[in-house]
Image (tube, rainbow, N blue to C red; front, side, top):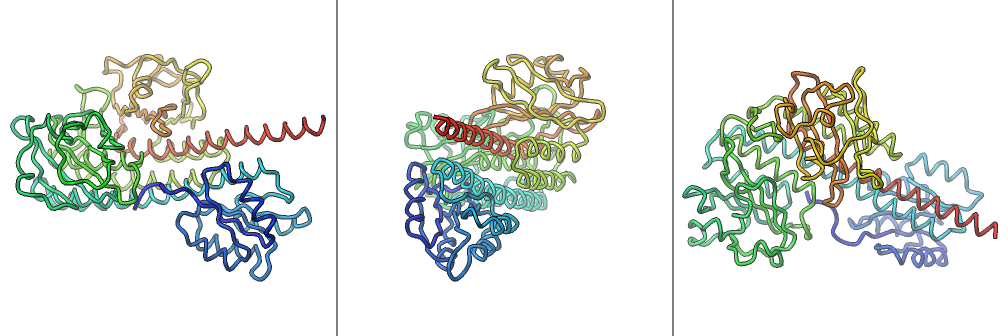
Length: 497
């Protein structure tokens, strides 16, 4: 259940003519990919078993097993793999059949190198996104099962600690996980559960919070992500529990009844590399659920104001609905490619499930304001065309990268009516989510449920991960279209010259 691939993606090039195989390999040399060459369909199917395969470039005319037969096998055995077909100008019928079979793109021979690189870049990213959605879907289902299992155990630390650490290890693909809790009024930490390491008796003793790596996260506002624990200045001189082989770690604060209680820790990612955004969201959700179980009263929903908190009770019957929404959103997004259709499908799925006005804003590079990119109106309600940045709860999300989930946002002193309400200026429940790509917040999503409906932070956590991935796809697609237009323009100018 690992995250995104950390190895360089491979591109399978299948053509019976050596000239074309090697020309394609040479043309793709500037890209961060490794070409794997095959001259028959049978060889191609064997090579496609490599999990590092990120795309395929396939000639429709092959001796023996035809290109169309190879495509059919690839789609059946590797449904996430994006396949580009190659054809001569006279092979239009075969091209149409290839597209019907699920090819994601096609190029005509002779091949233009820049068009090839653009097509392969799009295919590799498409494969990675499809695999990411598949991973997210299975992880969300597993998270729901883990939470249900924890609920069956009751509310006591001694029975929840070990199963929670084990669930975290499975969810994140982390070789070592642990739960530490505060002691002596928060001045010390002690480990209460560990998975993946045998701790010496002296390591079970209390450690001063100020001297422990885990102490960095006790009472913190959000998950602490460490990409290299040996080089991170925050960790210098601090005690670690166990001898970590890897250098990446996640530390999630556990809060009980609004008070700092402990830290859920994960390290040594089995797949290697650093922990990704999905894994940050998953450890955050599990830590919040553990805090709810230990408090016996539930999760705080209003993250916009420390003084206005509402409980979401353990055993919440809407938990399955939240996971189903995230899965439906993933399906809606992966079924679309064109940006406007993708965003429309995503917002419609959320609006229908939550009975809400939904919208997406991205930062305008020229003005610095938030510009409305897409919305799904709710009855006569619509959102504002632009939003000022610098004040209000919406701007808080953009600035901090933390979601706001408020049933009564107008009760928060940071609320600004002209920013934090839709176009009708009517205040009401607000769920505002950061849209992040590679750690940078590029915009926000706003959800305005009907009055009296719950604005759930747990729902927001799931949706933020999904919508951020959707925005990444939208921006990638737009960049590729611009690059294709640049190539076409250059070719026209070259012909005119």
